[in-house]
Image (cartoon, rainbow, N blue to C red; front, side, top):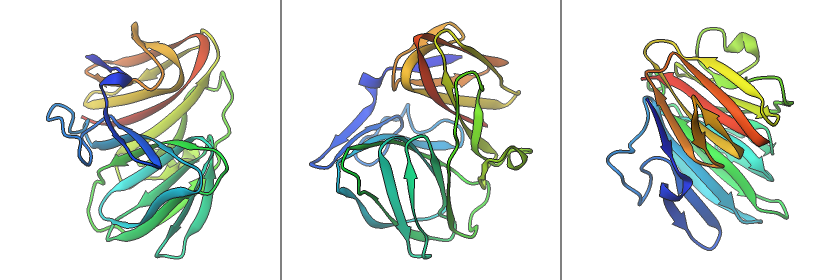
Length: 235
């Protein structure tokens, strides 16, 4: 089963500094048919205005992955962590027993990002934060950015306290990627830029694609190429 969720149908929120779209119910947006996808609970598509951001706020018992599409985000938390994650890179925060953090766009341009929340396999883990650059070129296939599946750590992924993985790829025009999907697993993927087909179903920029019950995912970039982010999770 492949369900294309057009960008125009996503939930939305906007104020003077944040323009957000929600793939799943979040904040004031509630859709009983879009409460999550397996352990994937949140996928927010955020644009943060320059010199603004999210003031300190708490999280608990959640794995939070931020993929920067444009610009940069500066993170700081009550554990003493501080760092900048730039376009193409990823940061992971383990909320665990509790963490208070802030995220600011201190750049001269808007920052555009995906923020992805995945439910952990167990509650009460030690909180933490890490960021890493993941250079990717076309033709390299999917890179595991963060993961808690067997073998993800050996692939250089940032760790997750969940049987899940966040992967990304840059695709040349017409490039094809085949990703197996094991029994009992599902996927959710979004074109960060460009467009592609997924098992023959067309997805435009920033559409959501929910996949379940497929043995493999065949992604074919359209004429302008594409960049994609994919989450692999248990159903």
